[in-house]
Length: 75
Image 1 (spheres, rainbow, N blue to C red):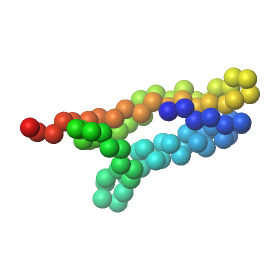
Image 2: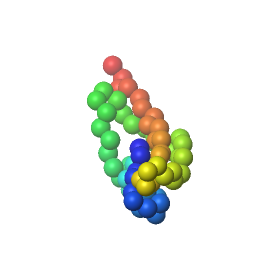
Image 3: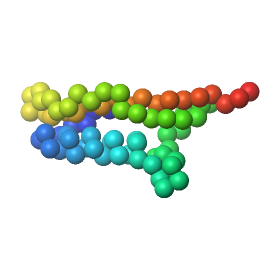
Image 4: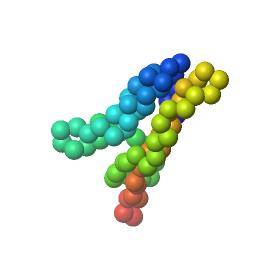
């Protein structure tokens, strides 16, 4: 995921929103945001890499890589 903004603060704010949306859990322990993957079940998620804020031509970006751990259903 790449979050962008016109300031470093905006890019960081958006990256926080992405991280929260993808990794937040409910009180029961389920992920707060479902990510449907046809034929698979997501059993875990984690941040693999965060590059932090960079700026090119006045555009600030914050790169994050999220890993999804999946399993296939029993057949």
